[in-house]
Length: 371
Ligand SMILES: [Ca+2]
Ligand SMILES: [Ca+2]
Ligand SMILES: [Ca+2]
Ligand SMILES: [Ca+2]
Image (cartoon, rainbow, N blue to C red; front, side):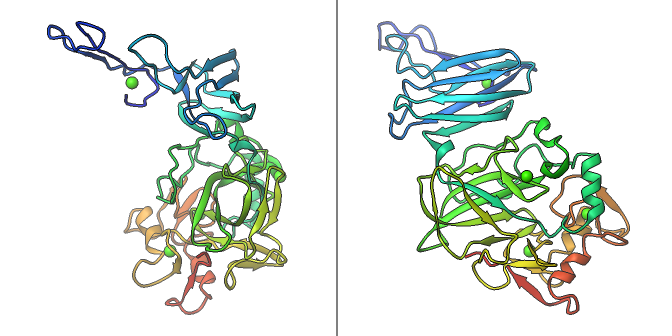
């Protein structure tokens, strides 16, 4: 009932099969749970029936293997939830989940963090796949930051931050999380942060058809939540513009619509040859194109001064009064993404905003080039 992962039970009493009891009230066992963990799957069929009756979910982890089937009914007059519920005990993640549909389609998920509801649409892990490569302006070209990340994992959020930022245009019920083990990878494939991919309509690119949170590696690969695979966008194969977005950087969109299918289509936003929508959608750093950083107030404008500027939130984050103060953690105001919000002094998060609007006129602004 409350989606906390501890199953609740509703019991009704009747005098006959379908007549409510006049002597006994219905009862609700409201299970508030304990310290154990869970993973739940909600399935939606496409080629198979919509309720996914007959589908089977197998979950693999340190405990071995568990299996659940979606059944239409258990007995006369009762019905069980169509949700596949798995108790994980003390385990914090599952190694993989395999969903077998009545149609024969198979969907596979890897490295699922515990305590989440996973929405699965039939065939989603094999649709409209993209192998995106991109770079963020904030942490880019700062060698020492990269070195630090090799030695010490970046304090990245386990949950994607975009749901909370209200970026969803389309129904997405899932708050996606990754296990800590995915974030502990070091070297060129270390995870820098969450990014957000969108597929836009080929003719009217303001229309969003599909969205996914994904992970950005240090070398620029944008990957699934297993930290490795190209991203399956989960919507039918077809022609789409691709948008890559980040919580405090401007997004960028391909100027061309791409024909996407089950084999990953590579889109390298770092290359000048990959044309993007609008003018100067990306920043040129010695020939590599990166996303513009500094959009601490997540709108389509980069501003240093005036109303709704992106500089003030930095000061507010560090307390609002002492400009030399700093705060550590995973914050939108951390423009250069070194794990620390700083307003003044060396390596502060304020200067890059001024640089990106031109460097000299504080009242200038820059506009995001995404329709
Ligand atoms: Ca409950
Ligand atoms: Ca890589
Ligand atoms: Ca802004
Ligand atoms: Ca910073």
